[in-house]
Length: 198
Length: 213
Length: 214
Image 1 (cartoon, helix red, strand yellow):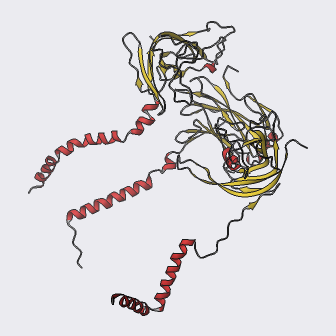
Image 2 (cartoon, chains in turn blue, orange, green):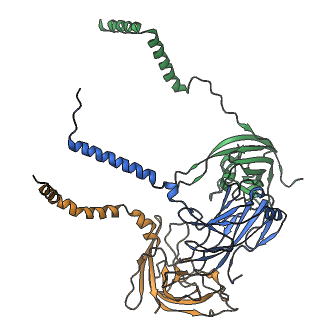
Image 3 (cartoon, one colour):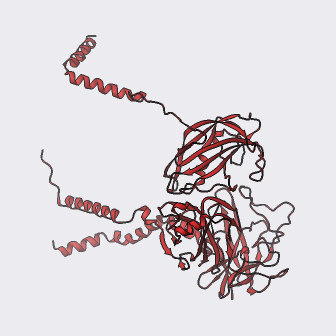
């Protein structure tokens, strides 16, 4: 059976279709996929350093730990591990905003996710007036075996932290710190304060 | 046939389609832009209520969650906006955050007493576009503060019942809201900021802007 | 009339003309296809439920549960106060997760149930009594009386799972507990990944004593 010879315009159309498929395939491979396109912008910050995030200025101040904490607002807790308390300042920019999402990332890469509600792990940093400093805390329980070398990551939206800035704080916790904290009890924590208004 | 003549004749042949191409392109983009409306237009200050020559803004908004619908209509004008060092009726000194001033905003309102106007927000805005929303927890006034922002505390008028589809109603035993009234609100603003306008809104994108002059 | 015997004879003739291999293949194909109707030819053993034993940890992924005791009470004092329904049923257990990422509190709440009891309160507004398998407990950390939040990796908590039951139901002297596993997958609603698809796992029968009694 003889195959019919394609005409010049048919060949041209065929070539264009193949070219379009090839371009599409290449684009598909090169462009970032869903999870990559929605990735967070992780911004590393050291203690005492100020990070300009999209929604405001973030300054981690100090980190402490104990086996039991007494909170100024909310429940006091006793932990089977160590309670880590990160104190930080936040100043909204443009419009009132807050920090409502936190992650403790330990030395083994294990992650504890926490937010602004609950009785135990909490990030408390309410939206307040633009340009006014608020003193905030992130309180999270950790396994003392993997606590040294941990970081805490914080960002604005508790439900969906994608697309946005995330501040990653190197807590600089040493083994000696962990040993001291496992022997400390009844750490008093000022959970949240507007600067100048205790 | 010469090549030049072939090229000319294709453009001429297709000239109507070529002219329509940009129109079609714009229409196609507009038809697929519902996300722009949903995630940007509806969530920002994009529909400013009209302001007449005497500075009165006519707000015409509505609440509609698919189950309960009611209009939000009022006329508002700015009486004054200025920094203050004390709140009237204070029984102890005022306390402000470090580096802040307290501004008093007085507004004059008129609306149909049957319209629900609870649940509004007031803010001061500056020339850089920063927004300083009202926040009663950001300071201690040293006086008894009002609960409502845009309506009188004693006669707020109709309010919707949370979780109910019944139309907004006045609380039993409460007098109806007067046809016109004035409100006074206190806002915390950083010291060095000079606000340029008062903004009032219930549901975005509709809002009222009252310039300070 | 002569058509039918003719057809039959032709069919038999056709079959006889097939080779043995073709006939065996045809029979095999028919048996295989028919076996699909009753689930296959191989004998299937029913899954045996794992047994829950007091004091022994049991993993119902992602939650590790060690049942310590089962108790009842009509008043839990400052923790939750007296029960509206009249009776609390509690399970005191150690919980931890086997995961490298913290597990949300709702997963712990779904991991344990009483089996076969009635008259339990739900968390819904109607407060209509439901079966014990459908009732969500409160989970309270016994050390400091706080509600359990997310379970972090490497941490074990002693908690009390607390349900309420109508006093019109007889007070159980023994009760069957049921643990449940979850699967980790993406939600079809919002693409977020979490622990879904609860399925029954292990059971055990335990005595029910009065809470607070020495």
